[in-house]
Each structure stands twice: as C-alpha cells, then as structure tokens.
Image (cartoon, rainbow, N blue to C red; front, side, top):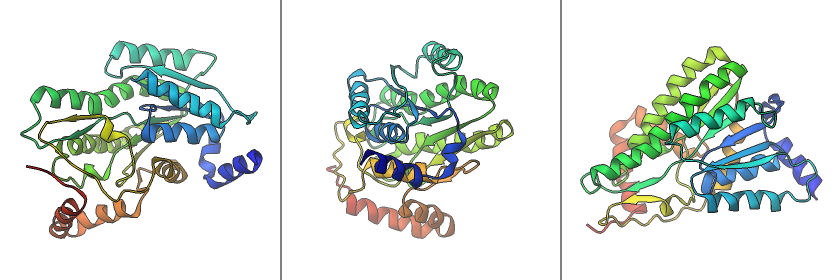
Length: 291
C-alpha cells in the first residue's frame, strides 16, 4: 500500500521537482495550516524537510505528524525543525550560514515563504503599535529571510523561492485592509525578485490562494470591535498545498490554486467597476460584522 501511495504522489507531481537532486525544502510557518500541509506533502515525496516556526509546541506536532505518517517508508529523508523568530536578523543570518555550510544540509533547493499572522480590523480600530507588529511579522520577516537567503542561493547557483500571498492582495475586503496591504507588498517584492534573480538560475513564484480552511483565525491581531464569521469554506490546506506544488515550474511567476482566484485576477483588470460590485456582494454573503 505504501509503495502504491508513494508512486502515486511521485507520478502526480510534475517532473520539475525531480530536477533538484538534493531534494531539500525549507518551509516557514510550518507549525500549522498551509505550512504544515507543505511539510507533510514534501515528506511524502521523500524530500529532506526543514521546518521553521516561532511556536515550538505546534512545530513539534508537525514533526511528530511527519514521522508517524512516514514510519513505514524506508526512503524517508532528513526531517529537522528550528524554532526561530524571523524578525531577529542575527539569528536568521546565523541560521542560513549553518544550513549552507553544514555537511548535513549543504544548501536548500526550494524555500517556501509562508509564515504570516492574520488581522481582522477596520483601519481606525487597530492601534498603530499593533499595526506595526503586524507588518513586522507579515512583511519585514519574509524580507529579512530573503535578505540573508539570496546571497547563498546565488553562490549555490540555483534555487526556487515560493512566496505565499493571497487573493486579498488584489481583491481586498472590509476589515482585512492590513492583511491586504502586507500581501500586496509581497506581490511586488516577488515580481521584483522574479526579474532580479532570473539571471542567477533562481526562480521566484508567487501563489495567490482563494479562501480555504486555515488556522489563521486562531493567530490574529484583532481589535475588540471586530466580529467576523467566515462561512462555506470547505477546501483544506492539504488540497491547496498539492495544487500549488503540482503547478510549480521553473520561471513560472503566478500560481492560482483555485479557479475563483484567477477569475478575480482577470475580472479586476477587465472591469474594475464590476469587480468592486461583486466584492461587496461577496463580503455581504460570507462575512458578518457587528458594528
């Protein structure tokens, strides 16, 4: 059964992953949600998996799940975890020096920039300091990671950066303005990196998922006046992770794992007025706020 399962996964995903002979992936925010789903998926694909998170308890749970899910697979590779605050520049620099110089790892092939927290608040309700903390986590942290990672990838001569954004980066909804701003900045950062790193054989991909089941509602900076209920979301983070990795290719900048996201992307460009009308209707249907 395990042999069939592994063959299925290896045949299901495109041949692009097989171009990385080292099969080494680093995933931030791997303690839960989409990050955990990526970690479990790459472990099933028999990659060396390095998982990062600021929460030791949830990160240990991810490692335990990987081990339990692959205990009968003799081809399971290295699994390593690191509790780290990506806002700590010195720790991030030290970490990448270790990863790219140690004989144990000797480099990284794919980096999944996934760590983020949520924010449900109107612009006026969120105190400025909380907004600063939010942007430090959702924008400065991935920027810090990339600052210390990229020189190593250039020296290595290859690599792939996968930045996790959201449809909210171009299709904002009320009370999610801070989150949309941070993800929009990540979009522009990814597009810039796509141009800057292409000559060095380093790919940059930006994925923009539509709504899916995630733990982000449990990891929020919220104002006391915000009360939002998200309804009718059935697709899991495991499914989203599979869709994203299946579409991952060299030189591919945008990945839309769901049709709705791609539709919104084109709709906003073709008819901004219709896009705004439908966005308001979507908010009224899927969200609830007590003002």
